[in-house]
Amino acid sequence: MIGISKLYCGTVEPSDALRYGRHSGKLPSHLLQFAEDKKPVVVWNMTRACNLKCVHCYAQATAGQAQDEMTTAEGKAMIDDLADFGAPVILFSGGEPLMHPDLPELARYAVSKGMRAVISTNGTLISRDKAAELKDIGLSYVGVSLDGMREVHDRFRLVDGAFDMAIEGIRNCMAVGLKVGLRFTVYKNNVGEVPQVFDLLEKEGVPRVCFYHLVYAGRGSRLMDEDLDHQGTRQVLNLIMDRTKALFDKGQAPEVLTVDNHADGPYVYLRLLREDPERAAEVLELLQFNEGNSSGRGIGCVSWDGRVHPDQFWRHLTLGNVRQRPFSEIWTDMSHPVLSKLKDKRPHVTGRCATCRWLDICGGNFRVRAEAATGDLWAPDPACYLTDEEIAA
Image 1 (cartoon, rainbow, N blue to C red):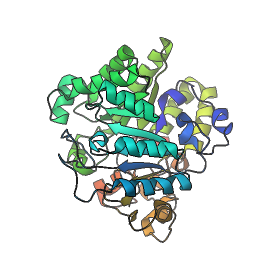
Image 2: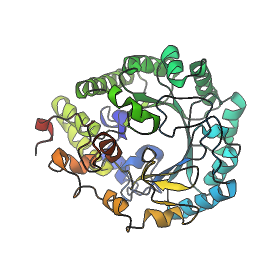
Image 3: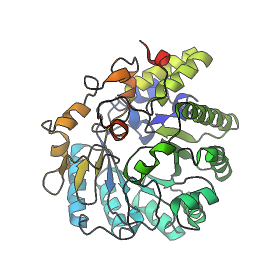
Image 4: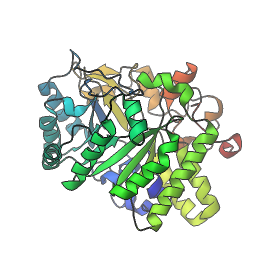
């Protein structure tokens, strides 16, 4: 996760993270990516049920619940363990988490245990009453997925009216004072919608947007050939930086982030090195705090059936199951041959990654994408768009 507004527009300084000792339990949400202890943010895909049919769904959600979904009692036991372990955030996802009848009870329970609870949703089920309920629970954030404007979004979601319902859900959250933001996965078929996403951000006053790079997982695996080429990725990063700066110049200050491609960090730094060398030095320090991709370290995933994964996209690799062992034990058991290497990928990555001068900042980027594209877990991530000259030591 690379904070474009934090880095490029200067809304975060290195001293901001240092003030809290860089401890995940003390850092406010917007600084968590700079935590030193890397306690995991845990994504819980609590249900496989979803009311939409998104073409890029990494979880391959279905219309109804899976037969082996965890019970509410099992969910609370897991939350107890996560809270004791020091996991700062639990992200309720799916499928569509709002289709789980006990989401409010479980989210309230997580908050009562001192965790920050957030949800990732398609937004279509957030009525004004539901938004008020989520606000009352103490939910920290609601991330609503969009794929573009009405025509493009509804085509990707395979349900007419999905866009209008999502926008209504966003407005309902804002009306009750619940922090809400957009989640947008970029690839060839919708990259032209990025300017309109910024227009929507400006018009509606939405305080946050995350632009996700495509990860080849779940139904998204079929879209590998639809990923942007390297030049296209560079162009969209420049566009995101330009539009973010334009909003700041107008007096708006939304939080703008890119997710799932840590080459973005060095790319922002290199642009700032040309434009503002003094700020570039501060950005380099923040990127060193961030440490890049955190699969198996600072982010983990629990499936609806209790299986634990290094991140929410790596569903074919199971580290254990919380029904048999607590998450905290699974996460710290270095006998697993992949998990132990994910704690420090530097000795294991190959090719241009192994000699890249940004390795400590990028963290070797997305291993699951490298594996999907090449069959080799430790090969260079094909989505890295930095040139050989840019990565040379």
